[in-house]
Length: 183
Image (cartoon, rainbow, N blue to C red):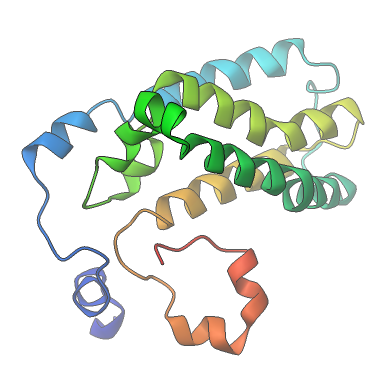
């Protein structure tokens, strides 16, 4: 394997914060699995009680298209304003500051939020999944790809190094709308 692609080499070349982790951050982020458990329970409940969420086909192209369009449009718009609201002093001091108190971010930092934020994010990112279930266009693949994409982008955006070099964004500027990076 090419050593220039190794994670330590990437971290040396482009770290966001060139500092070691402190115990306080590790201790504060010990509840990283809360989001996984919470989402698992909600996905189970949704699969049992949401009309159109049972006996899903493996693949439906129209479900992928609807998921992409709804996420790229209303969900991203609402996410932007939710995140802006979380940076307002009232909400920041009560909720979101917990997330930003992690200076040296790691992928698990992406899910370190108070419970109220987990609820808000789940509701927001569930919009495309609920719509494709209700319209009968849902598939196992559309759910799996969407959830994996959301989690991977969120983790990559908090990994404290640039996995994708900046020159790639210069070659293909629309890529910045499809990917979430630390910078």
